[in-house]
Length: 238
Image (cartoon, rainbow, N blue to C red):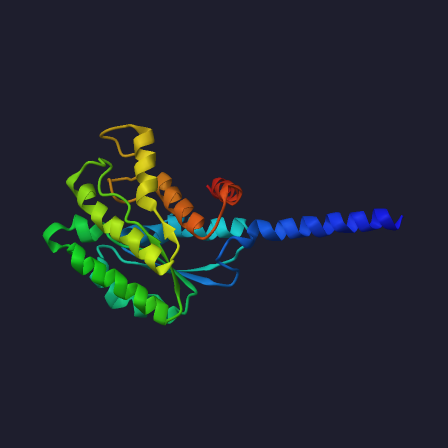
């Protein structure tokens, strides 16, 4: 009888350990705040109830992590603008995490944009400020500028994204390679001349928001099973 009891206790303990392990890889913890620093894409990601900021928070909740968003997206902003306000809009709110989405306007605005060398300085300074405030950063690559992946803007954007990948690796910061995810999806759709993940080639539709949210959740440590839970939660909310 004692053998059976011990076996049953072992099974219960093992199940509990596996349940704990299932969510142990998510690096955001319940009660933590996440700042979302960005431009109009991030502004829409919060302003739209089905935007990617809400989807990230809902996806974490579906996996037992209750986090609070600190929305900080402003339309038209570039890296210099975000550097100027990161303390006021994000760091002063005392988040544990910040996602950084920046680069589209630096390129898209052409002569009024930010050249690559200045962009590198601005982004590095943003990460330095976050580190000084003990805020961990998830670096996201800039998404796309038109769904024509061969557009001059997307070609120019490649150098900015290469820098972001390198910087994230150097800083050992989680990377959400959103640009790569968008490129993969657009190529798979294979619908030239038609927007499939954006409304206008830049700003997200629901499919685009889901791609962004999945990328960020993966950077936070969500595995395929946890992403499936997030998908189910989003479908139920829709």
